[in-house]
Length: 213
Ligand code: 3PG
Image (tube, rainbow, N blue to C red):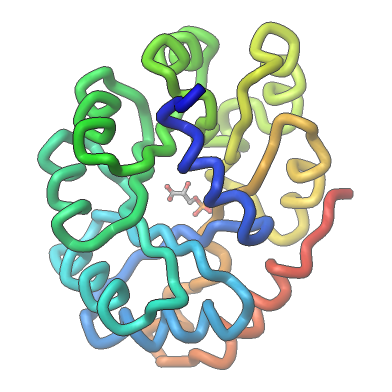
């Protein structure tokens, strides 16, 4: 069966961590993406949180073919359309709405929609989405909550994101219903501001090597 989550699940096959990226300067986009790719991290979620985010996505999509760039913080149908137009290959939303689900389906843009409760899991499932971002993972119950979700939602896979670190990621990755984790720790703002791409490559390499606890 061809569900909307099948292509999104492919994102989880490239490594254990998807970096959640905030870019304030267009000029940082390509070197940052290259630094992450050099460390073995290809799937990049660039958040729509800054005025230059779309231009950064475009620049990465154009100049870093090894990267699989997607848009994070997709909160509206217009965001989804803009992400597609910028060359994004997937979208991540902090929560789920039927409108975003339908828009991404129409755009053929794989969507990783966010959920934090059983009702939200059911709403996303009803529209065919079975690979979900669990957000904000730590604040919403972390590993304990994901273990509880495994009972009623045995066929649902998660990408926990929010409050996860290099130290805690292995505990999440050890859960059968977790396919990949998201986190911003690979791209510390001070390293980006300083253009310290070597540090970002080192953080990416460390994240790529993570194994389940
Ligand atoms: C986010 O949306 O900012 C992500 O969940 C990243 O969270 P983190 O900064 O706690 O990793």
